[in-house]
Structures are given as C-alpha cells and as structure tokens.
Length: 290
Image 1 (cartoon, rainbow, N blue to C red):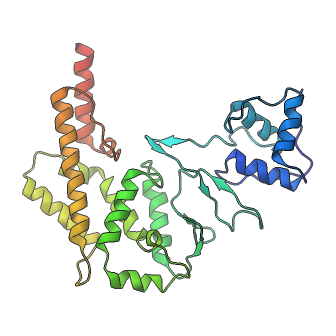
Image 2: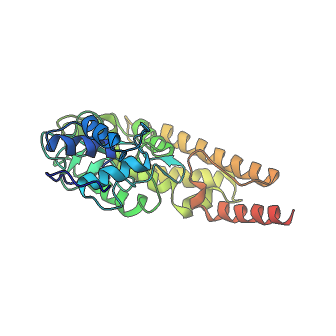
Image 3: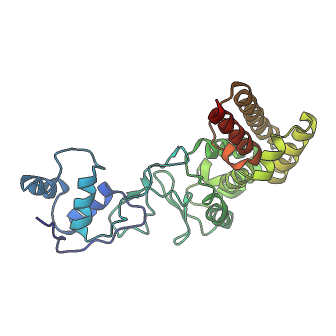
C-alpha cells in the first residue's frame, strides 16, 4: 500500500535530519510524530525497528512529505570525521519552529542571514564582517577539502587561535557582537589556520627531508602571518601546538615506512600531502608483491 503525503506540506530545510523534519511536518498537520508512525505500523507500512535512520523509516517520511529521494541522505562521516547534528539557522527555520541537520558543506555561519549558529545562542554578525569573510573562505576552500565542524583538525586550529590572539583583539571583537563566545571571536583565524594545515605545499614542506631548523622557521613565518605578534599576545603557544603536530606527522610517516603499513594520522591531513600519498602508494605496491 502506498503512503500518501499529509495534507499540509512542510518545506524540507537543507541538511535537515529526519527527526527534525518529522516533528515539524507532524505539528503542521496537527498531529504527533508517534501517532503517525504508530498508525503506519499497524498497517505494516512502517518498520518495527526504533532506529531513527532505518531505511524504511526514512522512506516513509519522504513519502509523507512528498520529498525527493535525496532527502535525509547527508553523510554521517566525511574522510573519517563525524558529521555532527547541529541546530539550523533560526532565521532559516519558520518561526516558532526549530530544526537540526547535518551540514558537511558549511562552517558555523549562515551567510544568508549573517548569523553565528554554534551553541545555544545564535548571534547576528552584521558588525563582525571578518567572520562572514572566513565563512566564504571555508566554503570556497575547506569544503572542497572535506573539513567539517568539530573535526580534530578544526578543534586544534581553534585552540591555536584562542591562545595566539591578543587580549586586546578579543576584547575589541567582543564589542561588535551582542553575545560573544570564544569560538566566534577566533573564527577568522581558526579558518585561516585550518586552511594552512590542509595546504599541500605546507604539508609537503614540513614532511620533506629538509633540515628541521628550516622547517621550524617556515612554520613560524606562516603562523606569524596569521597571528601577528603583539605585547599582550602569545602566538608562540600556537606555534608550539602546530610544531607538535608537525613532529607527530613526521613520526607517523617514519613509522609507516619502517613497518610497511599505510600512514594514518588523527587529524586526517596526510591525504593532502603528495609526499604522504606517494609513500602510501609505495607501501601498497610492496604489499601486492608480497
């Protein structure tokens, strides 16, 4: 028996997950989600499983909403990084409703409504244009590199920006937004550092056979360009964290070469390095010969 759409349509928001849409669609039709699902279950049109992403449940809600087959198919992971469910922009969702979704293609900013969407308090960014520029860089560069929010690499970049920016800079930015938060205030530098750490030329340089002193100087130069030194800044702390990452990546590559296995790092950045990929290819060739 075919499931017919409910009388009152509900627009699916970009990246919206099934639980969010089901709740909004049911309320728009004066019903509860559990009432609809139980009625369908009694006619064997709904799975007995309680799994929220059961394929038959997704198909049922697509039918109930008259949605396309791509609805509710956003990936749960991208390049080994989990794609978290997070609140959608409150201006994108019809008031007074709320919505959640998986948005692997964007950062923490809704460019359409110029809003910071991370955390419990969404913030208007009209007075903080640097965050909007950072989001455009995210979508122009980091999206293509498969970076997602809350990934280990992004959290490292945010930590570096937090410890490396001056107190005066943070205070000046806090005056531009109504509800400042640590992640928001350092967002421009977080994106810049993430772009640096996923840049092929940077990774190939620090993973090359060049002298350690030269590589350290190069990293320091790159970090200083993002986090300028000032009397009340401690950019050396950010440099130390990035240098620790470089040393760890070097160890990973060396161990993989000695042990004959594919290199794998906790930040998932070696896939951007031509040197690492070349070594991976050599390891695979050896495995095939053995």
